[in-house]
Length: 373
Length: 114
Image (tube, rainbow over all chains, first blue to last red; front, side, top):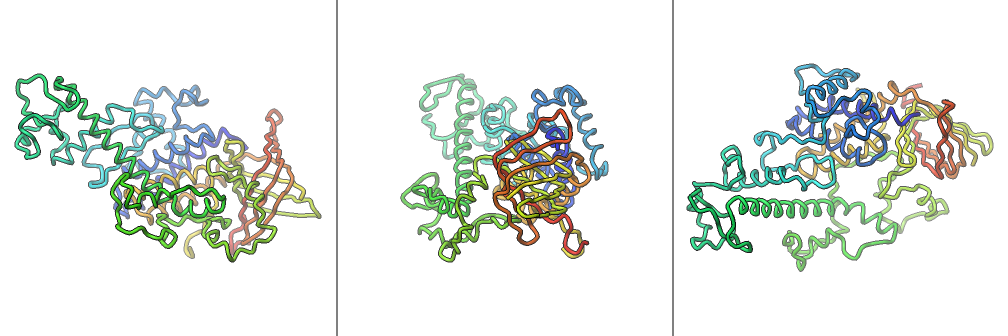
């Protein structure tokens, strides 16, 4: 059992899954860049769990940085590193297929995809390896430009590279007020004036005004993205919260989903439906049923009246389970070869397992367990 | 399932599986993939992790503890073991202790296999 091999093993599993999913993605007509995005999100989520050291982590804190992984700055070396990992693959990828580009290795640097590659209509925020996605001014600017392009039907390539909002064709936009009182985006024909009036800022120079506008746009976008996120989270929590909060007896005053549906509450959007739905009767909007092996899917916990309520339902068991949502549970998932009992002595031979203890992940081929009941 | 080998979904609860399911959930709610495609990816994951663990991992260890609860249902053993100590065959490696652990274990012989 070792924690060191976990990173390598997981890297192999991820590559394997991604390579095997290429054909499924093709059959479903989903762009291969989405698959690469999945890989990045997956890796960054694993990194966030902080249960082992992974090859894709920033090399500053990895042990193997000194050994195998070269400096991250040189792109050729990154390629090298990448191809090494490719060679380790059990199932090799044919050379013509979708190559996992260097960006998959170098997670820290995001390369903005070509605008045509992004799925139209769905604004896909880029995969973010770290928690806060918005502290990158270049990213914000890129987003703002994309947003503008969507709004005004202009392609981002036509926008000035400096980020100036010069859209001559839109000078006659009816929304523009002639008296300089700006309510939306100022439209200028790039004339001689050096300063422009912006509400709340007085007259300021063009570039500053651009910055302010870009910031406002990105703020608004962030706001709406956050609102959408919250709504989605609330919807996803609906299934869980109804059972877990009931079971644990700490129900919040108002469910976020109800909050969103409350017609008197205008945050963040107007209520989407005029009547408040009975939440308990609404089918759970969880997107995909995930297989649960040992029957803890929770669906059966909703109805409490028919519970047997025997001693085996002792709530202490739940404590021993230790499955607090906030932390990684202490769990061993494996196969058993043999389980034997003599009086109160148990012996078991386990194999091919994953073990998470004390916030550290291990993998093992074989384990012998002895315990007394 | 009849024409292809069946793989356990057990490992989806591991860290790597949870991370994958989270990522897929995110992408489904964003609309970039369909739930059906996500299920295919998950079944690819079931196979990959089972094969990788079987073929690539050599480590072994033993552990002792106090069995708090045992359960055997549908060919799945579940143990809740308290005061566990993990020992490694390597002499220099320290033992690891934890106050409790849950073990979920499926039959290594798949149905029909003897």
